[in-house]
Image 1 (cartoon, rainbow, N blue to C red):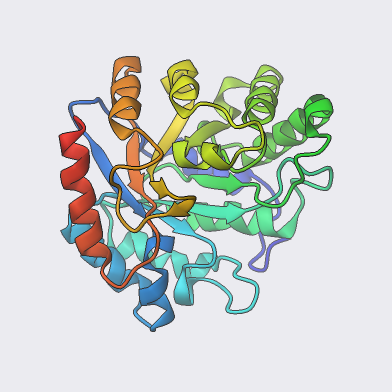
Image 2 (image 1 turned 90 degrees about the horizontal axis):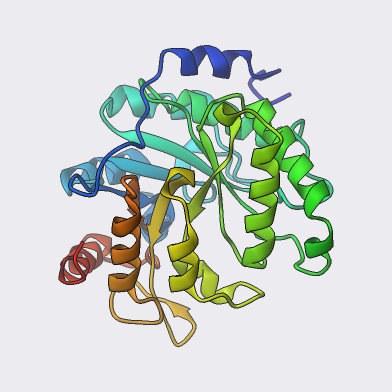
Length: 298
């Protein structure tokens, strides 16, 4: 049970029955957002997350990914667990903003369980900050070893399916590609989707830059070309140079013109979120990033 009493998926299902779907659009109507870890420097200085969201809204962002560890007063100070009651303030203050909650959770691990307290608190937090939109929980596995996962796809898919059924939120959750072998995550998601209802299917939060650190070293352009846009929840804008994440999306190891062209050609119409390296002047770097991406056809 979570700290504020979540015992199952009934409340989530009731919320979804009346919620709007936020992640739908066309390539002609770009939806921009930002991940709260871009503001790590500002949060560590005591600037309130709500103040940063307000500034982001003024800059044209409509989707905000609330990343565990970068939530300020909206999470516990020691173990960074989201505080659902506090997060409920955000949709009341920003009723037109779309929020999702992002957790580091080892969903590929043999120990992953839909009864895990962190997972349940993530579900509750996603519901609390959804407002009039469908709740969305995003998971990334940053801890599971790459060794041996490729021979445990069926078991991992069963665990992901169990998480999906507990979520009971239609398309309201996704997993981000991290540094596990891409082919493993791909196969796990395909197997999990085959075993559960379409409404519960997990989608992919696609981060092309993370593929540069994946154990099987896939070609990011080829991966993007293989994706079904209907299975994507969002795309992260990020760039790497000399193996370091940059504070600006610019020329680097990811060919963003190629990425944008392939996602546009496939018909992707979901949100694009900046996840740049934290910096003193996030607004300046995102403005520079937007100008660069426009030169890439965005």
